[in-house]
Image (cartoon, rainbow, N blue to C red; front, side, top):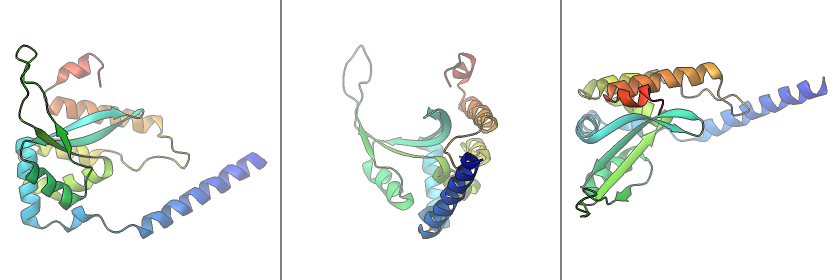
Length: 179
């Protein structure tokens, strides 16, 4: 009996502290993008972006990655949406030639913030519109107070991850259980 009372108390305390933290957070900068900025970002995502499902930490997250050789555009997007840092990549163009390619810069955003971004740019997307709709269906805030994700939500995420992989034209991963 005492154990249940302690669990109940812990749950209530966790939820109270979480709500207090959320109240103190400033509003997300993605919500303040102008229509022109949203349209420009949507164009970049349609042309250079990739929206895919990433399997990490025992669950599947929707992720947007933009690879470009122009650092200024990547940094501009990162500054607007306050996303993760900009990564610098340099790859070889082929195993046979072993020449370095031009430096690429990578910007990535995932989870709840990606969902907010997809909702705001959805009217402007053309190529990645299906991807954004799938991301908007994603169950994001579903962790219980003890930080676990229920099995039914995991199954939903797996199905949506498969839909996203199919939208990218890569059914090989689904057939072979890679995702």
